[in-house]
Length: 167
Image (cartoon, rainbow, N blue to C red; front, side):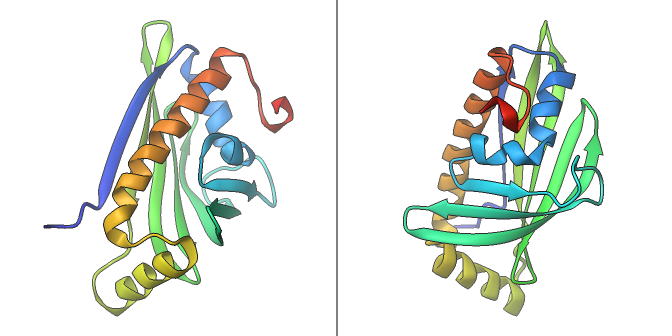
């Protein structure tokens, strides 16, 4: 069976694109949204194209850091970042914001950046050792995590949450 290297999930959020974008683009919120991410440190907020950040992730007993870099930040339209661990590219995560009626169609997408060859095998091994997730299970875990993330963002937006202080 061929390895799935990308996913996409979406939901409709009861808030305009600019509001939803503001929640997602404040990366310090990611620990609130994602079931795997526990915290994000952005040295010089707000995050914009080129910004770097550190993520702390946890799943069960497994805890691991990641380094991220925002590759696209187009206000109200798209927010994308690449994640690496131990110098190896791991994944591209992104969000698209499209008006839908009075709200926003929020789409989260993931692309596996672990390549074929030695570096890809090293990245797969790191994912198994540090995150406790074999590559074959990553897609199912990501899909479930994306659904949870989108639901949490939608609930926060509908409740009028704004940034990490709204916790």
